[in-house]
Image (cartoon, rainbow, N blue to C red; front, side, top):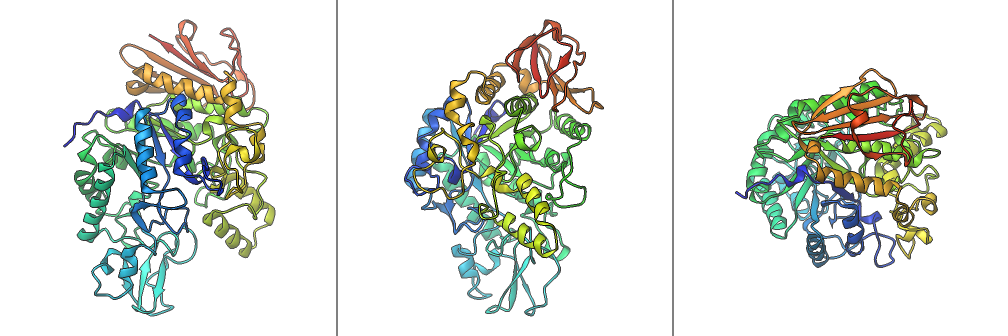
Length: 542
């Protein structure tokens, strides 16, 4: 087994949604050669690894999360040799490439599923989850995440197959040891090609038991993950992160145990679900209660200290832009984007920066239904229209929470299509690219970009970011997010006004003598008696 260095504890990961990052050939879709051409930009930002959303061969029913060949690249993104070049070019810049593994389900166009449908005796039939039945009499009433039943009838077999997502994403049967071995062989093939790690899509759902209506956290889940890790990840010094919507702190300790028996860390989403009406869908909007939010963040910081590891994130390809969500994307866009960055990057864990987050990119509030492409968004609109929801309420929810908010093209400059493509973009560019773009941010030393760059550098400079104990101050304050991180030699202090009003400056021991590391405003008055809207400061003692 390869010696583990835990390099990822000092690392910052940058997520790329390939179809929206950079188009190199004018077809309106981002590609691997486009990413290669932007590696110098990412090196300047200071990141250590790139997590690529899926680039494997796919019919693109769910934007690549429906894989038809795990060992090939989808032609829209390039070729396998392009991927090998990306791995090599990134390595020259000390950047590792993380692949997105979709192991809960495949595409219905995968060779395995095509074979599985041929007969019940086919050796691939048991790679998927089937139940006998009669047409129109579903095995049970389970619903798929994208709407409709989890069960799809196959008349030639007189069976239903199970799918938790799109009907074109049949769930894989992890109870079959031959399937598991196929997966391990595929992962090892990629490890041998030099990838630096993997993000594992909805990994907590692989141990589903549909007859008991269990989708995540099934009884054999950690058995499967430990076997997976032993046969693959432990061969190399990798970073692995599992997406686990059903994770609590106790499960996270298993996922991210220091012995490396499962993953490096998990994505958990407790903090991300706090701005919706409890018990309702994400579309049912509610204001974020900062006091409750701080308690959730504090819990995860405390519970995993010394026995697990956090992943730190505001954004990804499934979530809206954080500056529009919890900041102010109008009057205080830069200040609130910087505040959110400072609050997050001071905590213990590995930060993830989603493409454009470092520019303060915003939600696509100008979008109409003609502009949206996401299957979840389109299904939500259809279902809520049929249920009698008002058009204005539906659009308000989509403008706030649609996954397409994160999937608009990257803003490189103020030229046509934001420098993303010379052709017609697969999804419209956010019109505010003229004001918000990388070229403008790089030229401004006080920009959101340079704040992220500074924070990334600070995490590598001071050990307290990695091992300092977390203490939340002013836990009941509805506007302030204040905490310290402390080890034996140094102390970090983060003071933030989370909202757009002016608040009294909190009293925090040691601030007068501390070194100011970073702030959301260029001018900082140490004697100020108030914090301005979205003002955040990061200090260090030691």
